[in-house]
Amino acid sequence: MAAILGMTDAQVEEVCKKVQNGFVVPANFNTTGQIVISGEKEAVEQAEVIAKEMGAKKVRILKTAGPFHTKKLAKASDKLKEELEKVNFGEFEIPVIKNLNGEVYGKNDDIKDILAKHIISPVHFSKSLQTMLDLGIDTFVEIGPR
Image 1 (cartoon, one colour):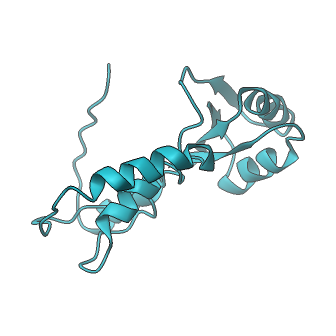
Image 2 (tube, rainbow, N blue to C red):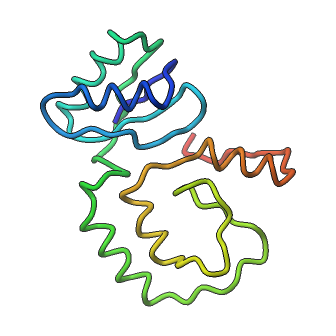
């Protein structure tokens, strides 16, 4: 995986299309101008060069163990779906936003299917943030490994 700074969503998608050897796709649309790509190591490295040639402000290879948020993890997604079938979900008491598309879960959404798709689908974090802002949320606390 690699973080690309200073390019639009469309530009990063174009970078991925220009990679000739291997598989690479946008995986995390974090914020405007900060998008993470994921895929095969050699393809990500080729995308790094292309992104810099196309004007990226910065490209940073991320230390990850695999091509997260891509179709390369379809078997893991299927396995998660099997395990989720054993879980009972109640109705949400507060709005919960799907990173799959940045929208609030609806009453008719298949939570198990959506959660399984998270493994193979891009994270639309910037859309999730916008949805929270639209809902009137004005305070955010980041919790992470550091």
